[in-house]
Image 1: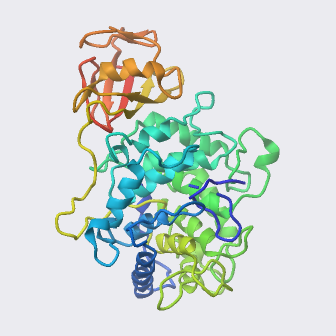
Image 2 (image 1 turned 120 degrees about the horizontal axis):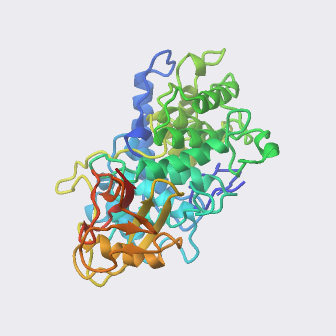
Image 3 (image 1 turned 180 degrees about the vertical axis):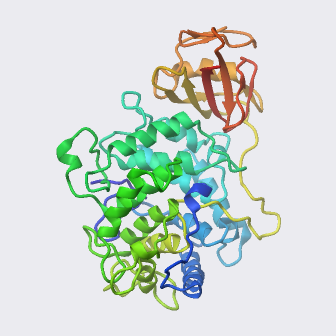
Length: 471
């Protein structure tokens, strides 16, 4: 079982990972036992504790293992903007500014990155109010994520055996929307990952960290509470309704794991992290974690359990009920869940004077290599998905230049031929599929309305480029 460094890992047991109004479904209080006042107090004191984790230089990123940067998702869910979090009131070291600089650095995340590094970065950048596709002229976390698309297994990100990379790929790409709230990646890309996640649902209704699709033995194994919550959130962020059979089965799996305290019994015992992940899955799907289905025979709900795990008045959450000190990671998972969020949250507007709603690059830097996400859909063959690296000569580039650079994209084979190969005219053929019979190639940027694809079409820094053949 593996998640990846600086990711979700139950504090004591450890595995190693890591949107979006979809991931933010507020949960009504019907049947609630934790009162609105208790929830509000939990959020307020939880924010105070997470603020205390900020380093003197303004950072939340730790050197390895579990990273405190997940605090951005919990802070946003509780209504606190990262740009308003400062060490000792020093606004020049506010958490958003420092985190953006860390993500933009050429040394981040490491010399041997993995898919979940970029997925984690995408989810937390978004929650911090940083456009993940426009962290800097040379850093596009959306493109960095699609670079791990598995051509031979469409819908998967990174090695398919490490299934959590696919779950968090879907969470990141579907949940981290544009600055105006639009889904920036095409539906066909999201749908491919939804299909992959569905295929890995175990017979008991849940999921695990490893791939199970096509393996009857693996599908018959017991599921994990944590990954079930994450997979639920991924599906719902991808547009799957709570009435879908996959979500209903997952809900019933979690319901069957509820114990008297309101906790879900997991392989690590009753703990804050597992409960937090399960509740975040319910939140993302708009399922009330304090409804009748999730109220134990003793009248306790998962929210009751989480609030009981919180130190008062300190605000930190313990991992296990027997712990005597708070856990930073458990505190993130607990607060994010109590605040009603999935695995990221739409960032609240900063209150600090002069701080914009979003931090983002607005143009390419001529001569600086940049990455763009490209999806090519001919309507028949499997999607071609890749990260294109090019060096712009101006503040913008063109679709023609993007497609030319795609000849050496990651993964390879995204674009093999384009007609015309020069100039700025209408694109009449891509990868051997030519305009005809009422169908033509069209381009959409960042989820905007598709228009006729021309080589001269202007492409801006951070645009997700979707090229599709159809009527």
